[in-house]
Every structure is written in C-alpha cells, then in structure tokens.
Image (cartoon, rainbow, N blue to C red; front, side, top):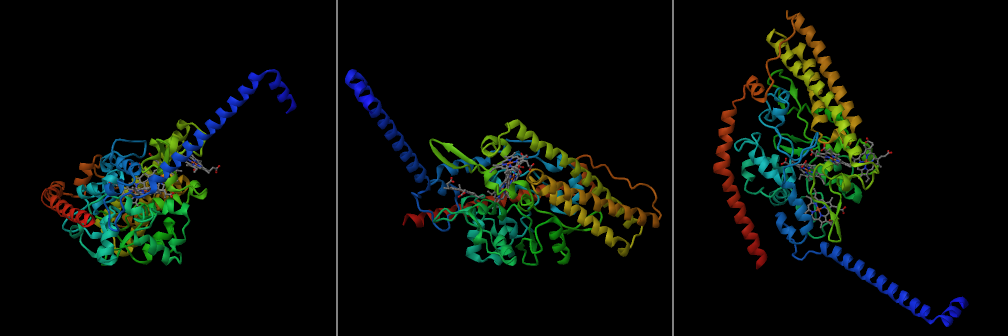
Length: 495
Ligand code: HEC
Ligand code: HEC
Ligand code: HEC
Ligand code: HEC
C-alpha cells in the first residue's frame, strides 16, 4: 500500500489513472449485470402467457401468440425438402424405392401406399391424402397419433367411444396437426402425457407415469406415438403390447398368446402382424438411452436467437443440425459423426434387404405349396415362422432411426428375422417335395411398384377414384365445420 501512496505523491497522474480505471471497471460490470438481467427478463417473458390458453385450445397458432419462437420453429416442420442417406422430410415413395414391400404387405393397406414420414405439421394432410385411409371403412382409432384434437374429443365423448367411432365420423373434429396441446399443459406449459394408451400401459405394468422424471418426460412425450401398438378387439381400443416387456420377442409372445393378427397374407395365407413404429422401444436398448440422453436432446436441441435460449421445436433428422444436436456432447467433427451414423445405417440396410429377399421368397414358396396340395397341418408351423420372420423385419425397419438409436439391437433383430425365414424355407422345401415340386419356385417380375401391385391384384385406378372423390366432396365439408367451431371458440373467448 505504502508503495502506491508514495508513487501517487510523486506522480499525481497515476492516482487519476487508478481512479479512472476503477470507475470504468465498475461501469462495465454494471452494464454486464443489467444486460444479463435484461436477457433473463427476456427469457422469462417467453414463458409468460400473454393470452391465456383455454382448456380446449388445439390451434397451434393460438399458442403461438404467446410463444412465437417455439411456434415459428414448430411451423417449420411443414418444410419437406431435406433428405439424408436414410431419413429426411421429403415425400419419398417407399414402395417405388423398394417394390418388395408391396409383396410383403400383400392383402394389407400398406401395399397401396407408403411414404417416408414427414414433419409433424403435415400429419393431417398426409393422413387424408394417403390411399391407406378409406372414408367408408377406416376406424376412428387411426386418428390417434395425428392431432391435438384427439385428446380434446376423447375428453368430450369418452376414450372407448372415440376408438369405436368411424374415421369419417371424426373427420370434422380432427383438423389441427400434431402440436402444442399434444405435449403441453395449457396452464403451466409443463410436459404432459395426453394419450391414454401410454398411461394405461404403465398402469398394467404397475407403474405410474406421474412418477417419471423430467428427463424421462423428454422422451415419454414422443412415446405417446413413436411406439408399437395395436387396435384391440371389436372396439378397436388402442393398446400397447408391453405387458410382457418391450423387446421384439416379448411383444411377439404377447400377440401370439392373444392370437392376434393384423391380416391374412394374400399370397402365403400366413396370419400376419404389422409392426407400427417401435422407435421408443428400440431407442431404450441403445447407448444413448443408457446414458440418459433423451429424444428431445437430439431432436429438439437448444437454440439461441436474440439472446433467448429456447427449445428448438423444428423436430427433424438431427443430421440436418449436427452442431446443435450432437456437438454439445461430442468433440468429433460434423463429418465424422455423419459418416459414423451412415456407416451403421448402410451395414444394417444390407441385413434388411437380405431379410426381405428371404421373406418374399417364403411367401411365394408357401403359395406354391398350397397350390400343390399342402395341408393345413403341414403349413401351420411354416406360416408361424413366416409371421415371426416378417414381424421382426418390420419391427427393425419401421423403428425409424433404429439403425442409429440402437444399431446392435436392430442388427440382432434382423438376424433372427433372416433365420426364421430360412427355417420356413427349409420346411417348405420338404413340403413341396412331398407334393411333387422339386424345381425352384419362380418369383414373378416385381421390379417396380406397378408390377408388384399388379402381381397382388390391386386395382389402383379404382382406389385413386375413391380417394379423389373423398378429397373433392367430403374433406372440404370437414374443414368448413371445423372453421365454424373455431369461430365459435373465438366468439366465446371474446365475451
Ligand atoms: C443421440 C441422438 C438421438 C436420440 C437420443 C434419438 N434420436 Fe432419433 N435419430 C437420431 C439420428 C442421428 C437419426 C437418423 C437421421 C437420419 O438418418 O437422417 C434419427 C432418426 C429418427 C427418426 C427418423 C427420422 C427421419 O428423418 O427419417 C425418428 C422418427 C426418430 N429418430 C425419433 C426418435 C425418438 C422418438 C427418440 C426417443 C425415443 C429418438 N429419436 C432419440 C438421433 C437421435
Ligand atoms: C412433441 C412434443 C412437443 C410439442 C408438439 C410441442 N412441444 Fe414445446 N416442448 C417440448 C419439450 C420436450 C420441451 C422441453 C421441455 C423441458 O425440457 O422442460 C418443450 C418446451 C417448450 C417451452 C418451454 C421453453 C423452451 O423453449 O424450452 C415452451 C414455451 C413450449 N415448449 C411451447 C410450445 C408450443 C407453443 C408448441 C406448439 C406450437 C409446442 N411447444 C409443441 C415438447 C413439445
Ligand atoms: C401425437 C403423435 C406424435 C407425437 C407426440 C410425436 N410424434 Fe413424431 N411423428 C408423428 C407422426 C404421425 C409423424 C409422421 C407425419 C407425416 O409423415 O405426415 C411423425 C414424424 C416424426 C419425424 C420425421 C420428421 C422428419 O422431418 O424427418 C420425427 C423425426 C419425429 N416425428 C420425432 C418425434 C419426436 C422426437 C417426438 C417427441 C419430442 C415426437 N416425434 C412426438 C407422431 C407424433
Ligand atoms: C446429451 C449428450 C449427447 C448427445 C446430445 C449426443 N450424444 Fe452421442 N453419445 C453420448 C454418450 C454419453 C455416449 C456414450 C459414450 C461412451 O460410452 O463412451 C455417446 C455415444 C455415441 C456414439 C458411439 C456409440 C454408438 O452408439 O455407436 C456415437 C456414434 C454417437 N454418440 C453419435 C451421436 C450423434 C450423431 C449425435 C447427434 C445426433 C449424438 N451422438 C448426440 C452423448 C451424447
């Protein structure tokens, strides 16, 4: 201290310099503090609903008035212009890309049309447009994972009643695409499970979903839809087949015990299962789930705009956004990470195609066996092997992202699929020989979607005409009724 006082006494300008430096530092610190405070306020503003959200508000744009950043990013899921090696948002015709699928799903709606999944904003349009929905036949249950209007209508008419309805009877009610009300509480904005099937599956396992941690909720909101499920019984009650566990074998056993089938295969007559999209179940078996990394961590990373940090609601392939999605935890370059994902996907694809080749052949060989006079007794075990082989192939393929989420489990499942299909074919060789067929069974030309659809006898012209009529005459009526309901809500809240 003495040194400084001496110094200032000798050179007074040093004192002034010290004074000015100190004053300036205090000023800078003050500015910083006020800036941080302002940003905090800004961040808090994001959470504060300016326009209270009513209990039945399913319109995303109304929530958007309070949360413009989340809404703008959410709305960007309508964009349909990205394609990675195995994913993306483009409307890609999967049947054209791989016509074997038409054969695998012969006798079932998926053989008519199947596209790569797009962003959530398109869910209603895609569901109305696809040839798989039929305004005279489809059940109401089909709507369940498409719209925030689903939990709203379930509350109004009852859950079982919702499932037992016809698709067309609910058409004017279910119009807003997957959005805020599907995942958030209207009052607190906390994450919320709105789909009864997930809550019920937990209950049957003796668990309460309300005990889920915050980090678990960041995956469970997705598990409302990105899971395996089926329509149970006459009432088409949407049910997760998780009672014995969530592995491919546990669910297979569940379905076998219930003697459930989605359809009878049009070529082999096997009692088939259609896997939905067990994305959540497969993710649970992977490295990231084991380390507590949630769906939202990769598919809804944080984003910063104008000083506010918020959750990116443009849910998409994380490969479109590696810097925010992966580099928060990983130190590799973007290119290294991308190629590590693609490498896994490419290797697993070779297994997937191998499984498809085998199962397609098994279906045709089974038909040849029936044609040659095989008996029910001779065929029962073979058809069961085909059922299991295809279920496992479908489980692995339809678990979108599974090749990355859990590569080893996906490869394991496909290996068992190939093995089951091979077992079926070995048995078929014996049955065919017994009935005098010794030559290789010929596979018809299924090199394009159109050719494969002709092989299974689909009248695509008729299907198209039926859909065109619906889109021209009925869909606009639904929209008109929905607009009237929305106007009524606005009138009520203005009162
Ligand atoms: C560690 C990061 C990570 C986690 C955690 C994660 N994903 Fe993914 N997901 C990916 C990557 C990478 C892909 C592959 C994208 C591609 O091929 O373009 C992907 C693909 C997908 C796809 C297909 C996307 C497309 O464009 O075809 C869906 C759907 C998906 N994930 C859903 C989920 C769900 C649901 C969860 C949680 C149960 C989850 N993901 C957890 C990284 C992750
Ligand atoms: C598929 C589920 C899902 C949908 C749909 C969804 N959100 Fe979110 N939202 C989340 C998740 C997950 C978080 C992160 C929550 C956490 O970790 O606390 C989140 C966080 C938020 C937050 C808290 C602030 C932030 O950014 O982290 C707000 C506000 C929000 N969402 C608004 C909306 C709005 C508005 C919509 C509709 C336009 C919407 N959300 C649709 C899942 C969803
Ligand atoms: C209410 C049901 C529902 C919920 C909840 C839901 N999804 Fe989806 N998701 C869908 C449907 C349906 C599609 C396909 C939409 C289409 O193709 O029109 C889809 C598509 C996707 C895609 C493909 C989009 C693209 O551009 O590649 C990804 C990725 C995805 N969802 C991830 C998630 C994640 C992660 C969560 C949880 C944060 C989640 N989803 C919650 C039903 C849902
Ligand atoms: C929240 C943190 C976190 C995020 C986000 C994350 N990872 Fe990871 N990742 C981990 C952890 C932890 C491990 C396990 C490391 C270990 O076991 O040594 C891991 C392992 C991996 C592995 C090696 C194991 C495997 O499954 O093959 C790859 C590859 C990988 N991550 C890629 C990605 C990609 C691509 C993304 C973005 C789409 C991503 N990760 C996002 C934390 C994360």
